[in-house]
Length: 372
Image (cartoon, rainbow, N blue to C red; front, side):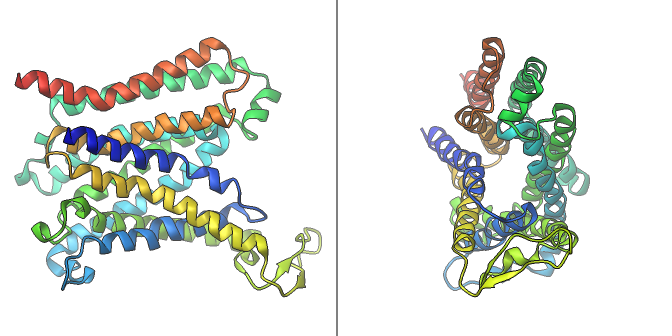
């Protein structure tokens, strides 16, 4: 029963993450780089920091965890967060060229498999005495393989979509649809995004041990990973602000007219009232950031219902990514990204989703059968 509760909590987090691009679509008159870093401020800094505070017992401070003894794990956690930040940037581009459903499917599927495997493998290089490779049991490997199989099937559905629609139909569903370019970017995004779980693996002991509620033990490490990712995204987004002269997006104290492209004089001030769209943009960025962070908050809560070091615990990141893909495809259908596709393409897509759902339960079934 505890496994079911843990899976339900992770599923709720996955649904929230898959929904985070809905409020982003409500943002008006901001450049991509501006709204991306503002929602990141909430998703990768403010909310993870508040979440990490939940792991701090009474009478202690979060900064007590950042000691010289933990310095290697702390910096490795942040480092892999920086690498994950590259995945976050390319993740957004994958959805630009493939849409929410297909972009998330390929990127998150790759992230699921590599993120689960790379953590123990890299940890074994630095701490072989802990035998982290022993966590990669048959059930774990099988779960990853079945998950990747589901992703491959969805990728086939995407290829069928690309081949079966006219250019006009593709653009109607996804404005900048480009399957070859999107596939390459999504695979890169998935590889780099897998570094998130590697960071969590290195930061697994950055907490107060038994003094920390098991439901919140991974949240300090989550904060360090997202901190590293925020740095990567901030550098790129601020560079784009400078390049595109879009710093005015951040100014709340006046409304602005359309920027002139000919004379390059920047924003023309029309009045000094607080812009109504600026306030709504901040709100939608907060909602998007909160929905995104929910996946890792839910992961921390859900893992507390699994045996630490057991199959479901090790595979929980992969399960989260698989469920993200399931729900992103549900949103893809709602947003009509698969409109105009043949029944055969939809059948292949459905089969891929079913295989992904099976991958979340199969390891538990295998473990139960092996013990009986």
